[in-house]
Length: 248
Image 1 (tube, rainbow, N blue to C red):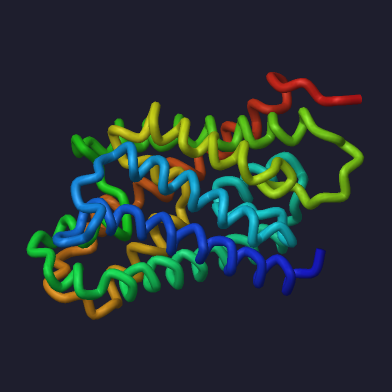
Image 2 (image 1 turned 90 degrees about the vertical axis):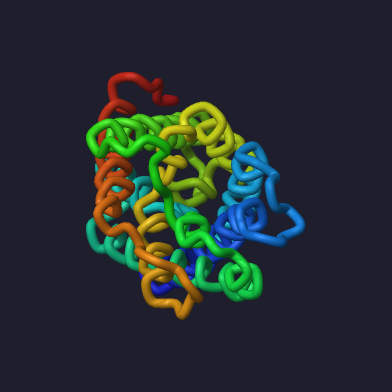
């Protein structure tokens, strides 16, 4: 697969993921939005559909959309080091662009919202109870589930398929349901970043966009949804070897 194809496809897919994912948080959280007060179940459902759309439009690259997935597939040998760097760079750019577009959609609602923490929550995650060590554990376990099940999906399919390795090889619906399941079951403590680009790329957007009254970008917490998911992705990939069956 050409690196240019990987880059373009991952930018488009991750931007779509973030536009719709940050969009559902904005709809639920921001003042005077028609979805205001919709609650966490709507956020979980919306993020699942965001994954569905992101995977669908980035089939050409295998739709990783997540450095933790890419690093996991690097560990299993499904992507090269050069490809992994391009994947991750594209995912960061896509996350920045998609989250920025969500701000444009809800610009007047950002202006009407008085709470800086609510504005930041549209872009990036924060823990319900701040305890960095335990927050990392939560993100490690959530991302372990993501990558382990993604690899399990792939091994349960057709090993002769020419579809690139990654989420696109699984079909968009199972992956969307997987992310919804992680959010519903494991998302309460940290907001289930489970994706370093999803959190860091959007946090950078929050920091640089001219958002009225936005407050801090909470950089003291920013390492948690990067380190935790990367560790979880590596552990999920390593566990897949001995624990998952491989079709002959």
